[in-house]
Image 1: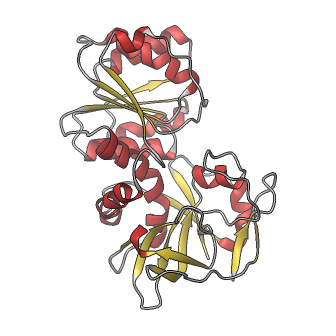
Image 2 (image 1 turned 120 degrees about the vertical axis):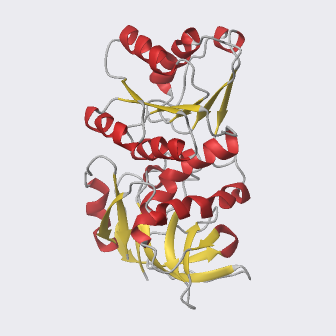
Length: 319
């Protein structure tokens, strides 16, 4: 088969022949891959920087996808840990890590949205135990996952959604996606801190895609602005686009009811994630969530790696 193959962490994958994988267990099936999203998580695996990377090469990138079984069943699937990636003409799928999609589903839309949507969907439902009527701050709302997080928070019943980020073009999109307020993180620290406090001081949950400096600024700003510091604030760390570490002053843990947690591989079981996928897929299929995929042939994977996209768009490779 042909696949995107990484032979060096310093260069993009190349389209070349690779041995076709074979099922080796009763729950496995070989599918024809129809669409695979080029997610940030895929890029970090392909350059060896993701925290799960073991440094082994060659590798096929790709962590999920949409494929069709020999019997014609349409599946969305998540690659098994340690298995070959999904950016290939064929992939072995563990049926325990897959869900069936209805006929007529656009595989490109599902491949584009499931992974970025999953980050906030699982964080809110499985980690924060979010309930309708609560309020949410999306820190890093101008990334693709953040744009979906704003929509998902609103869809799950948030009474108020605040989006914070740097990109002014993408900040301008948030109101139409369900944000009640937006905060630019591009400015003097004191001004940003004050704006965050006014807009989001009393939120119940923070979905944090940034970490690093923005979180160091935002965390005390929100706590200082809370009318009732004993009101629970759940801070769910999902990404680290602005930095892998923060300096956390001890007072923020004593001065408020703050719970800091992560959401990702390891903090949520594979079974727990899989249980959430049908509901999320249903929202994507129904058109409830705005999705803007940019499909490119798998044969153009090297070009795809350096192709810029419009705000809210995600590249999807189609074998």
